[in-house]
Length: 545
Image (cartoon, rainbow, N blue to C red; front, side, top):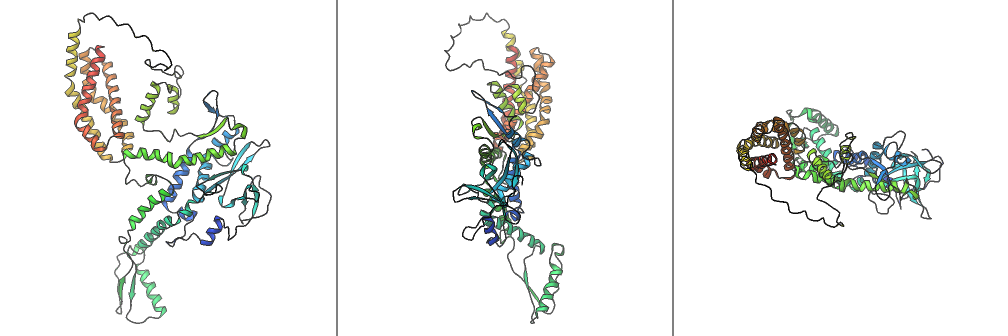
């Protein structure tokens, strides 16, 4: 317990004002469906376990750092500050940061509150964070309205009362600002239905997937005879390994089935609905609980963004505000602040990232080395930190430049007929190039149809190899164009590679933004022809220029 050593007076929960532990002890957490739901039993439901794991794991995986504000603007990592070490490297000598924050969030999600003791040195600077079992911590207010945290031992005896500046307290949604609601307690009826359906399904298959029934005997049986008959019947027919055995009824006995069939009780629909119900309780997109019935490539990216904005961000704000209040000294709060780094979670696919990088580089927002740093690459020693500026842009406060003098008309171009002939010859290659592109697009269409809704995986695996096929398919056409335009073989190879990269980027963009029916229509009818016209026109123009 570190600083906790003195045994202090105990404040007991009463029937008039019961705490959460007493309330659960009195009711047992029994739901209307007849099953007990508490933080432990709820975790045996796969949807609840997955919900807690995905939220706590995501928060734990996000890097949390301390930053220092710079003048007049900007910020930098406060690597020399002790709080940075607590947040990002070693919150506890026994616990790494990921496990610390994952465990703390798991406590909040299951029990409404997560607690950690703040250990400080002689100068009141925080040196370590020790996680508490939330069942042994009780926030209280004294008669003077002072907030204290009672720490209890395994017997429920209060052994210390700590002030708020010695406790990190992450709360869930609450009513008094003191403690958070346990989601499990509020959702116990919904989870009870799911658990009851699970138990029902297990019992159903344990009885050979047949409903229970009644054995009738024409004579009156004593209790011992009834028990023996029931035991003999169960030994013969109960259990999945005893299905489809032939029953032999003697002495005029009859069998009457009772109970509902699974289809009558909508067993599968009930179990499926509970996934969405639990997702609502934890404020999660349902696809995060592995229910992908309505997930498509068009909406999955928006749902993932919603997961960060709506499901994760509220927890991150709770953590950073608690860190600011409890770990950063008051005089330092104007200079230092804690923040999670979300870049890793918001990364798009390769095509989307590189398109965003190209735009940011062009407009001078990012340098080459900043882009390489985001992609975990080493910096370029020379010129990597240079920011570009478009030549046609200027500050809004500057006077517009004088318009350039009207140029003299160019002299007559004796080579114009020859360039026109070359352009016509290149244009004649259009059917051949369109045919090559059409073959590639038909191959892509088949791959998309096979992948069905799993287009994210397709874009990563298929297009990593497909670019080389596109380059090889259009290579002969580019060789012919090079001969017509008087270019060498190296020019043809470079153009084929550039056009293949452009083709793949266009396909990845279509996969992210177009509906499947529209995508198939475009790829199978018009795209190859339009690309061939645009490419050949551009090549001829660049060569003539």
